[in-house]
Image (cartoon, rainbow, N blue to C red; front, side, top):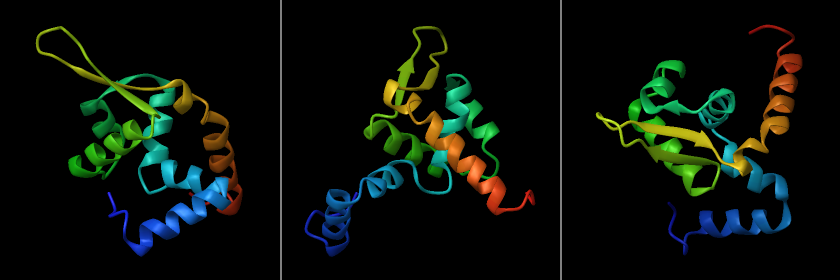
Length: 117
């Protein structure tokens, strides 16, 4: 989290007020968030499943990304009452509404890469 008095924070707020796309990118942007959202679109997953299905992500980065996604209202975290207790992550309704955005980004990436992935 940035200090609210920092120039970086103030610039971000100015952009958010004038460009809705910057709001979207601040919530789903970065290296890992789109992948995490896409995995959770398919089904709710445990932390360990997300870690196993997101190649090369560190535990710290996964934890941080999940916290940010939850703070932005895109992901929820549920603990089961079973023993041992399990933590399940799933998309909220707002998170699920991003499917078309993520699909469009994926399709654009495919065409921009010329099929070279």
